[in-house]
Length: 398
Image 1 (cartoon, rainbow, N blue to C red):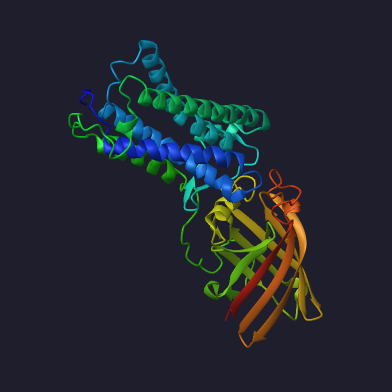
Image 2 (image 1 turned 45 degrees about the horizontal axis):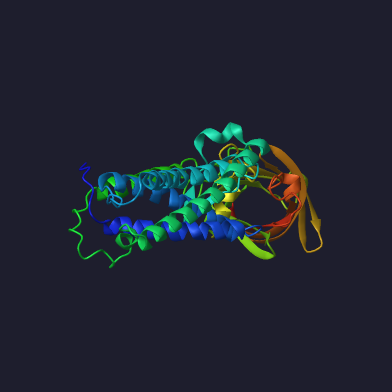
């Protein structure tokens, strides 16, 4: 890399300077105005990660394209202070986002991070055994205090730039504003190192984002073959998975959300004339829960909710069938994260020859299933009751 300093800032350096200045000011405002606001909290994390990788790119660009020298008339102590402020800025623009990332990773709440509602972002890989209130509060303290240091540095930076612009010595502010370069300045050196700065930063970002996809489950699971659950139930019905569905719904901040499990299997042994001998076993791939909102999908897979990496399968066993007004009722034992919960399932069944059509529903408690109990045990955000709906089509075995 050519270490020769240019007489001017490059256009890229100028764009990065003002873009990051705007993002830093916005982040400070956002940090003060995001309490109990999920959208702003996610945006705060998204902008923080953006600042982190822009800072890496900016540091690499500065290495490849050294900035103009400070004015010759500037006193030595002021030059030292200027260099110190810039070094502190670079350190904090990397350290504060990393601290925020660590804080989210060790938080007992384990809230998923989805950058701008599109890109899943993982927790730091070495923090799994560090999750706890003490470390979380420690990192939160330094993260918040770091913001105040940034504010102080911004004030010093602006004050210094203005002072030297109106003082006797030649200032540098005009060199950082597009179109206001000194006419007497010699031409800037040709910029270089674009791939080094931005390609490297983008590649690191892509590698980390890709790691979030590992263990997230099949993206488009196909319908399973009959009897794939291997439960040992002697099924007398073949489920048509393309015409069947297991869905769920509830309330988040007073608004309804709906979801579906894309992969599940069911072994059905059902005899209307001999209910006592009937039994059904269902296996659900919790990694395939889909709501249409990426933040919800990632949150459901997390440790606090389904804990899909450790417990990828949930099971439902149906027995004790009996006829009730308007249809049937069964005792369902739902086992999620190794925790069985018993609840009633009501359904209607319409059998026409060898074709059967089923519609059923049940209501479960998040508390009983240990879902979201670290961050929302009081159901302040997500209602405790969640509805499960079943729609099934099946054909009688020959």
